Length: 132
Image (tube, rainbow, N blue to C red; front, side, top):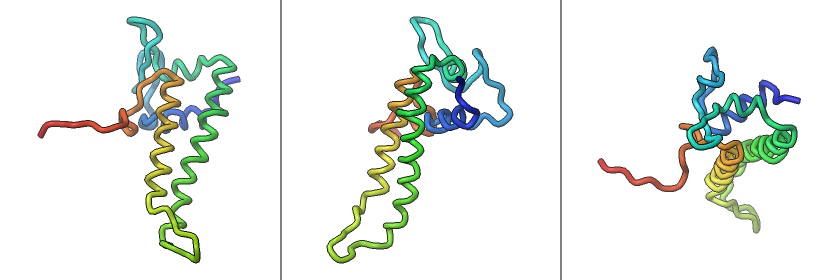
């Protein structure tokens, strides 16, 4: 069984890579690359179209399904932004930030599982210091 077109698009998006649109991706052209062995690279497209059945199962069940749930939880948290406190309930003022952080952690874990670096919209994570 192979990943569906939607699942392939979701992996790219969750990994932080831009959409493909009319770009052609193959073993020598892609936005994302990963090490196979010293001096040997594979594209994200190659890796995703050549998954073993057990790897595909892990990718779908442990990452894609959970990432979809985590992503929805971020937008659904917007329903709580208008309430600071109701009776004994008090909203977590950092809920959206906390959920986004957890979502990004799982996106990076998926990248690690696939063996590629996080894409431009996900970045390396953590704190970076630059000179002006």
